[in-house]
Amino acid sequence: MARPAFCKKLVATGLSPHFRSVVEIRVAPLPAVLKPTELLVKNLFVGINASDINFTAGRYHPSVKPPFECGFEALGEIVEAGGKVKDFAVGDIAVTQAYGAFAEYQVVSTRQAKKAPSRKKEWLPLDLSGTTASISLAEVVKPLPGEVAIVTAASGGTGQFAVQVLKKVYHCRVIGVTSSVAKESFLKELGCDHVIVQARESIDEGIKRIAPTGVNIAYESVGGETFEAVVENLSLRGRILSIGSISEYSDGSAWMKPFSTYAPLQTRLLSKSATLHTFFLPHYRKYASRHFTMLCDLHNSGIVKSCVDPFVFKGLESVPDAIDYMYSRKNQGKVVVEL
Image (cartoon, rainbow, N blue to C red; front, side, top):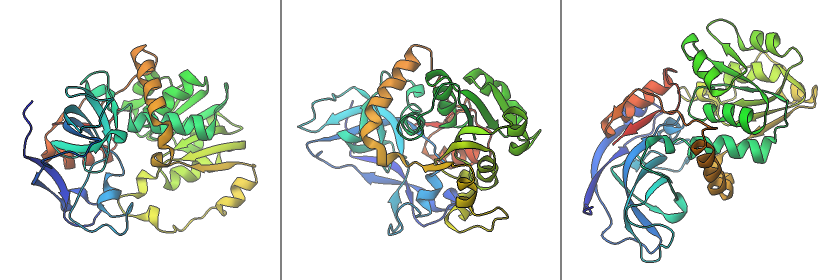
């Protein structure tokens, strides 16, 4: 494959959670020479994440100043490798996690890449989304067989893996939460024992119907009223794992102290000897390769599905549409853009 001198990439020209309003496609030069442990990757697919709008808002790195590249993850083909690279070769397919993934080509270090079995897009969700679920459950929550677990945003990119790992690896009783009736059968196919459809009942009503004594584990990524309802319905010594608060990203309320009609969080947790955990994947990087390999093996054996939403997005110009689509809560599985 010929090595290009330039490539197109999405660049944020301002700071805002309104992704579409601050990004544009630019043509930028690629480095003429790679550093010894770098890879040049031609991206085939890029993944869409809720935090893409946090990044363009400058919330992850308050000191960042536009213009800057955006996007977190991709799957692509290695077209060039630095002189000291040993574990990758030209022609290998890799999943990558590095800032600036929304680009035709990307330079990454070997520590930001993992070999993928093939160029199929289904391998992409297993990395960032899959390992977020797998690592956080294994290293933080430590589920036990028979425990009752609830997963909010269960049909999303990481929620789908939380459901399957809790059910098929830890043998928990799993409750999936979704916004619409259309996603109910999808969650049942993933392994949910029960589904709370918010168009029919509130989360509070659903948990009280399914698990009157509360849930032992909550895998929570929505925030706001969803988080509050889950906390209210934890069992004695329950554990809630917060990996984000997607409902509050667009307006920035996750970064402000919200008004609450509930008792202080510490009081509610204390009353049940419950525990709140938080999880940010970069802090657990040392576990990533092992968990990605495990998930690939589970996927190969048919135990864990890697679901990509069937709606097709093509080209860098469609990334803003893909982000809007994910925030519309229509997706069933990971939202991916084909380049």
